[in-house]
Length: 298
Ligand SMILES: *[C@@H]1O[C@H](CO)[C@@H](O)[C@H](O)[C@H]1NC(C)=O
Ligand SMILES: *[C@@H]1O[C@H](CO)[C@@H](O)[C@H](O)[C@H]1NC(C)=O
Ligand SMILES: *[C@@H]1O[C@H](CO)[C@@H](O)[C@H](O)[C@H]1NC(C)=O
Ligand SMILES: *[C@@H]1O[C@H](CO)[C@@H](O)[C@H](O)[C@H]1NC(C)=O
Ligand SMILES: *[C@@H]1O[C@H](CO)[C@@H](O)[C@H](O)[C@H]1NC(C)=O
Ligand SMILES: *[C@@H]1O[C@H](CO)[C@@H](O)[C@H](O)[C@H]1NC(C)=O
Image (cartoon, rainbow, N blue to C red; front, side):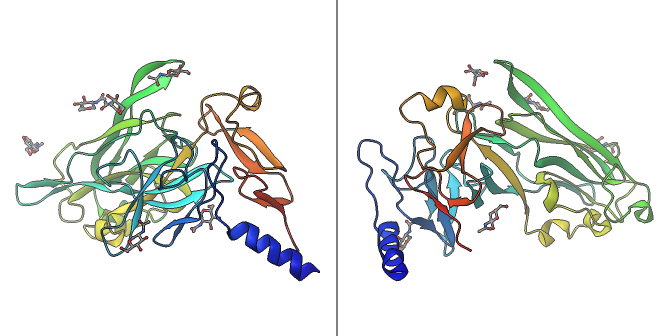
């Protein structure tokens, strides 16, 4: 009997539903090794409006990108529905000094205005690594209804490699700062006091990046030139996503409310605007699909 129920369930789960009159679908899409859960999707009819992603199938290993990321600068590495997070690879930006020559990564800016995403202010830290280093990001942020310019950054100095301490990112070789809530647009900038001329023999480069706080631990080797290649040029960063801009209470009374599964709950998105859905305690699955939240079996 249990086996039959299980088989029926399996058939129900594996049969593709169709998008009829805006009813959520689960197309079971993948890009490379990554599952793409609804409301995300790459093919027409498989995603909720605003949740379209792009699977770049050109390279031997396909990568997933935000639809707005036309330059393919930030591949997606993880989608977490319960926390409302999308993890991306954020490039490490560098500025290096050689014999009277400066080399630097191309100017970097991100613009995810008009999308469902914002850079998470709780999970990410702006980070600068170097001994003659001022790093910053500037841009605009929607603060209390109007677009306000912001600049955040930090300064890191050291005079000898011995003063740099493993695991300590507080201004000697490494510094961090928080970022404002709700960032959708920023540019990255560098400055230095002496073009690294006084620290050149042990620290020719400055590095800056946004990084998921729990996924970067500064080590004293990071001030060396090998840092960039050791990290393959990128670090993980976190985007929060949200459904719409309304509160749960407002959205629940309207068509298009996204938490369609039984045993699902609505909560305010981390960005402070809009909402996300999750399964009630004791249930797991996809709250954005009809019957998506299933009782956990032990
Ligand atoms: C990627 O390309 C392969 C073969 O060219 C194809 O079978 C697969 O469906 C493509 N995947 C996506 C997500 O477009
Ligand atoms: C994605 O992130 C979530 C939450 O951090 C984690 O539980 C999950 O294992 C990750 N999935 C993959 C494929 O890395
Ligand atoms: C960011 O993108 C939005 C929408 O695509 C556009 O209207 C805006 O001008 C862009 N902002 C900047 C500073 O490029
Ligand atoms: C960021 O700073 C740079 C250099 O100071 C400046 O050229 C640029 O206009 C600034 N961008 C914003 C959005 O403020
Ligand atoms: C800024 O936020 C307000 C609501 O807080 C919204 O009405 C407005 O459209 C937003 N402006 C932009 C440019 O995104
Ligand atoms: C740093 O280098 C720039 C050119 O890249 C030069 O104009 C400037 O004078 C240098 N500053 C110092 C303090 O050496």
